[in-house]
Image 1 (cartoon, rainbow, N blue to C red):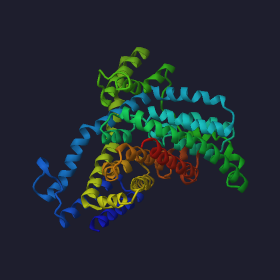
Image 2: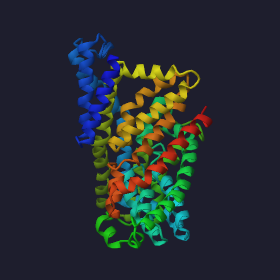
Image 3: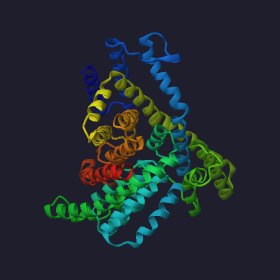
Image 4: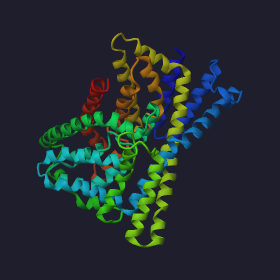
Amino acid sequence: MFGLIVVLLGIILVGYLIVKKYYAPWSLLLVGLVLLLIVGIFTDIAIVSGKKATHSWLLDIVQVVTNISSSTLAGLGLQIMVISGFADYLDRIGATKSFVKICAKPLEYIHSPYTLLAISYLVGQFINIFIPSAVGLGVLLMLTVYPLLMAVGVSSVSAAAVIVTTSCLDLGPASANSIVTSKLLGTSAMEYFLEGQLLIGSMAAVAIAVSHGLIQKYFDNKDLKSGRLTADDFKLKSELIAASAKDKQPDAPRFYAILPVLPIVFLFIFSKFCYSGVKLELATAMFLCMILSFLVDLLTRRKLKECIANTKAFFQGMGRVLTSTVSLIICAMVFAEGLKLSGGIASIISWAASMQNTGGVVMLVVMCALLAVASILTGSANAAFFAFNSLLPHAAKAVNWDLIIMACPVQLVSGIARSMSPIAGVTIAVSSIAGLSPFEVVRRTIPVMVIGMLTIILSSLILLN
């Protein structure tokens, strides 16, 4: 009972602070330290054991932060920082813009409004594999796909809802959540993507695309009849987009579109799926692609000083994600450590595992629900998944499941739930550009995302078992 009370207290405190817009990383860290303090005062549990222990339970609380920081920065943190730096460099030289333009080009030939809307989601989700930034992708799609959708007769709120959800599945080896999950599974991010994510994600993507086409058409017709929408809501407000979505990316040659794809290509070639004679780490692949992209840009522009100046974006991107995502990971892991040491999580897992014949299903539903609520409250799939991913191995072991059956759907659900949150960065950015309320947009995304969640859970139980 003590552990359950501590877990409940911790989740309520974090939820309150984040909903009240307190700085998320420090909120998670602060509550985690409080939980560790409670554990130290009221139990005999060793907070830190082995060589890293300080032999003072009070100092061990701070040592937890040191241990987690050192291990994270040297491994997972570096990978995420290099990915972010490479993505920012591609933005700076215009390669990302070229890639999105080429992918969106075939959409111009589809004139059926809600068919175009459904296919636009699939195109956006495909692009997200190579451009893992939800906000960045959302803004680019507002510049390219949004006008197409409005031109064929889709309402502004339907178009915005689709664009908000294009990154909902967090697919691909460049996703931070995918990297975390692959480390849990003891495999590479590419192997996890091809052997776990791709199958389940494809099923969910089809279900989401079809649902978008049907549900957005239903809402458009219903809201038009009720007066919630007017004819003006089906007209493109070009002046609003021009004022709000300032395109800072330069134009680049069309062949630059190959640059965002290079990391995936190299990771696939040098893997067990193609040629395993060479072992290529994710960070190494990113550094390699950064060097190759710089050489391509230099040979194209032939302006050494300008090309070297552009590489500053790489290191700025690394620093930016250190202060956001990586710090969030570290603080969330401290919070998770406090939850685990309290014993409350173990009690919840034991309860779910005790369900005769349905223990595994109950456990999966409980974990998905936990991550979904956390993602909606924080507006971040990363914050939610980083805080609770370490519970997945214990949950899977308790019901004698392979870890991938538990980890893959939970990871995908955390991303889907973000698209249901009115405070998610991508929701706010897209809504602002479209001149809409974030709550109006998530009213359209929620029913579609619920269908996506159910598809992920059911397909995981059927296909991964």
